[in-house]
Length: 311
Image (cartoon, rainbow, N blue to C red; front, side, top):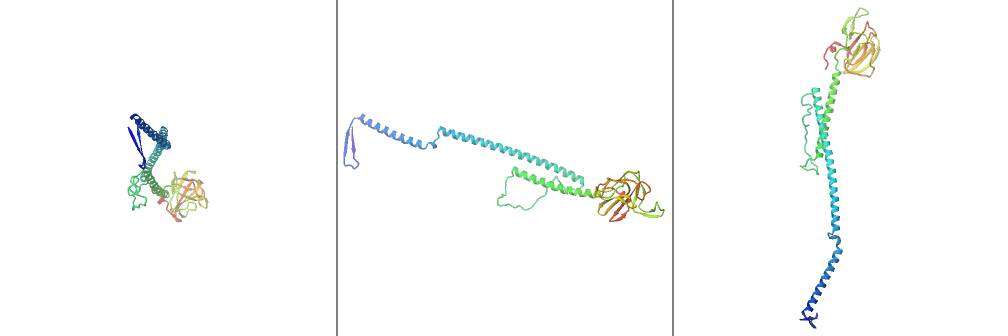
């Protein structure tokens, strides 16, 4: 076999002669040389890009990172569940509170004998008004658990406002009813002298009597016929030991000839409260209470009040 080698500029040529085995050997050497060069280049590229290859160490690091993320995710889920449970507990507490407020409101409404519909705790409060959306609001939004809790809290605030108003109304009505003059000034006793013209027990002459007298046992209770404030507690000429109670709206009651006073000026008394003990102090012929009713300073016939029904 002949091999002709031509120079680059084609000016000269060389001819080599050899057997087939020799040529094959040269070809094999050239192939091995090219493989060696390629392997060297590949090794260099691998060593220079080792961080970018999925080696065993890299796979191990990736697995550790994924495990850590899984643990973090589990912790987040656990904390979220705790928060959700807490919110659900809060929601149930608010619902229970709402139920109790409604029951209390209905009971008070019934007890106060208010007109039907004035305070209806079984109905949703009437609300209204135009819808006003800000730039960040959406026409359609999902109601979250927090939104439900906020709405329930608003309803509770509304119920509490209704209850406050109802309480004020009942309190005012109770004060008005308690201040309503009615009943006897004694627990036990009998009417011994009426209001108006009578014979004076000391002079025997005709005289005017501004109150009524109830006779009874010395030391028995004298009671206030209505709620009010004590404005006098002490002796006064003719009346002996005297207690006066101001009931408002121009009304004042007097309890005279007492043996002992059980209240002092400034005390608040209620209907039926014992304010003195029956005696015979002052201008008196025996144990009794002289009871007067005055309106705007003018004496009234007490029988108009002692025999009327209490509110």
